[in-house]
Structure formats: C-alpha cells, structure tokens
Image (cartoon, rainbow, N blue to C red; front, side, top):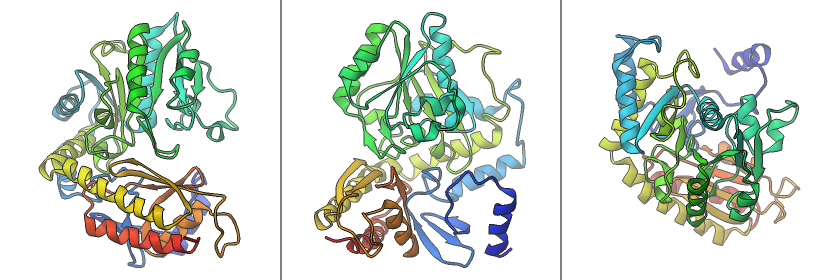
Length: 405
C-alpha cells in the first residue's frame, strides 16, 4: 500500500485526534526506524518513550513469539505464571507492596486515583496535583492534569482535584485541607516540559504526607524503567511514594500499564472494586519480563547514567553556542531543551518555534519531540551510544544555527 492510500485511509476512517506528521514508518530496529520509502531515521523520542530499550529488542520479540504460541489471553479470574512473576519483579525493584496490571498510563493513574478515594472516603476525597502535569486522557485523569488546554470542551469535570505550582512547598501546605487524601505528581514532568522535582522539596512533601496520613502518588509512566539511570526515577531523589504508576517502557514496546501500592494501602481495593479485561495478560507480562531481563543483561542502567551525562553535556555545549537555547534540564536520558521564544528569528520570519525545529530535524533524519511550544524533548532508547548522540547533536546544531548563535 503506498503512502497516499495510507493517508487516505486515515483521513476517511480514523478519528483525527492526533497532530500527525506525513511520515509512514514501516519498521524499526535498535535506535533507528525506516519509512515506507526506505529512509532511515535516528529515533530520539521512540513512541513517547514506549520503545525505551530500543525498537524490536530481540529478547522482547522472542518472548512475545513464544508466549503467543502457548496462551495469549486468560481471564483475571484465573491464574497464570507470568502475572505473579512480573509483579514480584516490579516489587523487587521498587518497594514492598502489591501490583495491579492494566493497559496504559491513563488506566494506571485512574486506578491510583480510585485507590486514593477508597482509602480516604467518606471524609477525605480531594487530590492535589501539579501545574503542567500530565496524567492521561480519561475524564478523570485529564482533570488531574494541570493543563487547561487538555480539559477544554469536556466540562463539567469531576470534582475533587486541586491544582498548585510544582516545586512550591508553601503552595502545597496552603492547599492541604482536612479533605486532602493524596498528592499526585510526576518526579519529572514530561509533557509539562521536562521539569525535575527538587529533592529537598520532595523530602518535605514526604514529611507532610506522613504527618497528615496523606498518600504520595508518583506518576512514573514516562520517567520509569531505567530512563534516569535507575529503574524508577524516584530512586534518584531519596523519597519513596505510597503509590507508583507505570506504563510506556514497561513492556518494551508492548502495551502494558501498572500501579504499585505499598503495603499500607495494598489491600484497599478488594474484589469487585476495580478490574480490567486485558490487564496483565500472558502476552503483556512476557514482554515486560523480557524488558527487565534486557535491562539487566545488557547493563542498560549504567549506560543510561553514562550516556545521559554525555547527552546533557553535549546539549550544554549547544546552549553556549546558540543563544536561542534558554535552558537545558533533565536527568540522564530524559532531557529538555527550552527555547527562547522571544529570541532571534530565522527564515520562517517568526519568533523561534519549537515545532519548526522538530520539523527541520525530521527532514534531516532525526526524530525528537516538542512540547509546550518551545521545549524540545529528547529521550533516546537507554541503549544509545556516544556515536548516535554525536550524530543527533550534529543535526540539532545545524538546525539551531539557522536561528542565530
């Protein structure tokens, strides 16, 4: 099928809910993808971090094939080996508790919100979330999300959410009331512009939660599974949550989500209070177990730490060279480059536009992302090599040069 036919099918039969780029991707391997015409791209934003260990990792592919020959799906009313084994693996890498499996980050966050409500009701049912956060697209998670643009047109929104500035302990203390049951945040905001939680701030948040019996929920949907040099990003910050949500890289490219509840609240959701048809299927669990195996076997955490430091160093060099860059921030291989939107103008005869930077990188064979209009999000697979970072930085350097130095 040629690209024109593919575009036509999307136009005629697929709901236009995404801002799409006219690019048909046909296959992927390692850190690269190829379009339908055979052009090769360096993928530094693999599926919103879903293909976080790389595209079509051999261990994940093999695990899916083997499992598909035996059992694809089984009702959660029955047992299967993979789900219990994967739950054990997640707990072994995080904190004592139990796991609920689902299919996506939005579902994981929805489940965490339900758990918090069940824990606090009837007296407490309010959850505090952060400005510029992103927690999903369901009606509840979009309400929890601290960005009005995602909520517009879906009113009335569910009650019980309070939104405050990120990294502001005074604002948090003022927002806490007798109705507060949980504080929900991303240790590193992805969609919000790669904003990193301050470790001292988080320590105060943890103390506040302990004093008032408030649950601390960490959304690690994007920051988890090795991206920051630890399996989960909270492990860099010295604070352990009561609940943690996961998805994206958890399945090495295969759809799976989960939330982990500490022993304090692990049994709050009992039989009949929550569920899912497809969550924790044999196929999904096989893919996720293979992902954990690959991370360990190929020492990806060490690589993420070393290559993450190198990536941030190279981006810092670009900042010194290009005045259009206002700030470089992030942890390891979760990096954000904030552009000065009021800075020099280029041949597009308009203030610097992150989308144009993205488009020009695409033309040169580099896939990145732009969020918030002026933050370039750079999150390569955690097996990235120095040579590949250098190639990406060379392309970005060329594109930024158009906008002034």
